[in-house]
Structures are given as C-alpha cells and as structure tokens.
Amino acid sequence: MPFLFLLSFQQEFRETAANQVPRLCRYEPVLLLPMGLGAILANIPLSSAVGPRGPLTLLFEAGITTELFPVLIFIGIGAMIDFGPLLRKPVMMLYGAAAQFGIFATMVVATLLGFSLPQAAAIGMIGAADGPTTIFVGAQLAPELLGPLSVAAYSYMSLVPIIQPAVIRRLTTPTERRIRMTYEEGPPVSRKARILFPIVVTLLARLVAPISVALIGFLMFGNLLRESGVVDSLSQTAQKELTNLVTLLLGITIGSTMEASSFLRLDTLLVMAMGLAAFIFDTAGGVIFAKLLNLVLKQKVNPMIGAAGISAFPMSGRVVAKMALEEDPSNYLIMHSIGANVAGQIGSVVAGGLVLALVIQGVL
Image (tube, rainbow, N blue to C red; front, side, top):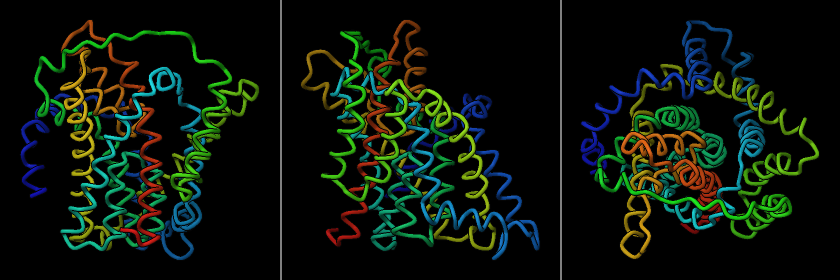
C-alpha cells in the first residue's frame, strides 16, 4: 500500500526533478559534499579513516552516539531563527503540528513491514525533516539503524525542493495555489516578548515531554543569544563558526556510516523508502489540514502554507513562497510560509520528545 501511494507521485517527481536538479546544488551542498566524501573514505579498501582507531569512527562515537553534534547544531539553528512571524500569528503553530503527521503515519507503516516499535518510531522521525532530532531519537531507540536514519534524514532534507512541489501539485489545484493571503504587519513584537518566548517554550517542553528538553533547550538557548541583544558576538559565532564546524564534522561522520557491507541491505533500503514516505506524508498532512480549514474559514488560506509546516527550515518556507510566485508573480507568501516553517521547527522537536517518552515509558 505505501509503495502504491509513492508510485502515484512518480510523474510529478520526474517533472519536478527535471526542473529542480540543475538548481539543487544551491540548496544543501554543505551537507551533501561532506557526506559524499565520508562515504568514499569509508569504502576505500583497508581505509584507516574507519575502524577501531579511525578518526571518523571516533567522531561518530564522540558526536553522534553521544548526541553531542545534534544539540550543538540546534544552538546555531536557534540563533538563526526569527520567531517574530510566529509570535505575530500564533495560529501558525497549527500548521507546524499538522505537518508532523508523517512521523506517526510512517511509524504505523514501518511496524506493518516488520520493524520493531522502537525501530519504527526512529524511522518515523525522519518525517520530522529535522536531521538533529532524527539522530537524537535514533541514537536512543534504534542505534543499529543510526547510519541509514541519518543518511535518509539529511538526504531527503536536501531534496525538499524536489519532493514537496511534486506532492503539493498533486494535492492542490492551480486556483488553490493562487489564493492570496494578506499580511498585516501589526505592532512590532516587543523585546520582552522575544526574550520571554524561548524561556517559556523551554519550560512548557518540560511539562509536555521532559525528554525533549535537551533539544528544545539548546534551540531556545541559541535564540536567546540572538534576541537578548547583548551578546551579538556569541550569536554570530553560533550562526556561523559553530554551525559550519559542526555541520562539516556531522556530514563527513554520517557519510562514513555508508559502508557497502553494512549499508546495502534490505532493511537499509526499507528505511530509505520509509524516509521518503515520511516526507510525503508530512507534506500531504500539512496541505490537507489547510484544505480542511478552508471549509470553515471565511478568509481562505493558501493550502501550500500547510506544506511549510515541516521542520526543514528555511528551505521549505522558501520552496512554498517560490511556488506561489511561479503561479502568480504578485502573490507573496514568504512571511506566512516562514511562520509555518518556524512552527514546524518547534513542532518536530516536541514530536520527537513525545515519541521518545511514549516508547521508552512503554505507553505505545
């Protein structure tokens, strides 16, 4: 059944890929290049880069297994995010929540395919469209699948400009994609609100899913550096030097897990297939949720906004805004799509914490 669902999008994928592949290298080369080189180093016969004393193996054990790299990445992500659009329109949190549908739908499908519940939960987290969260959850629930989980998460994040437009076009009409959404600037968000927001979100995460505090706390710490206005040098370091350094090490370390002997197996291929399904389910969930809202709303929303609710920030927001301009050159959805995208960043972390709590505590 899930494979029939994926096949139904094959024509859209082909057409979108034909248009987007020449542009793809502009999106995520910082991930793809280190991952590619790491894979080459890992597959060279008798390579000293991997193994008990190999530097890539040591990096994997120090940064991935311990979950250190994911939380450090979140400091940089938090420092880059402006929560202003979300604070002006808190309703965008609904789109961020709806677009996490793929996590739970993929969990069900993976369980039906024979994966254990912890493995299925880890695979479903690929649908968070959030590499650090996927690694964080996978290291605790399915460390044996951490390699393919990481590769799938980051590979499909880089393919968002191909995957999302294909799904959006299949689920919407040209008329729906041309719906205009007015943006009212309103009063500026106060400095006090910007500073209190990361603190309050961290405290709420403790109440909802305590196990998510590490990720949400580091994400909000980075944002607090940005919004405090008194540590600009630390904020800039988090956005640039820290993020670039950890991304470099994370990419090449993940690539080193792609050894042919352990990677080219049926379960690995299934993980990759389920990862694609998770991204499709996420995008479809967000779009369908927006279409359902339009049944009761007087002022219609552009259903593409729902697709921006995934956590691939800011790529998904840019993709939706670009699609709107392609349909109507005077239709600017960037503020709406970025607001939903920011909400998805928070939603994915909270969803990861909930999944961990439910599986580890034996609720599911």
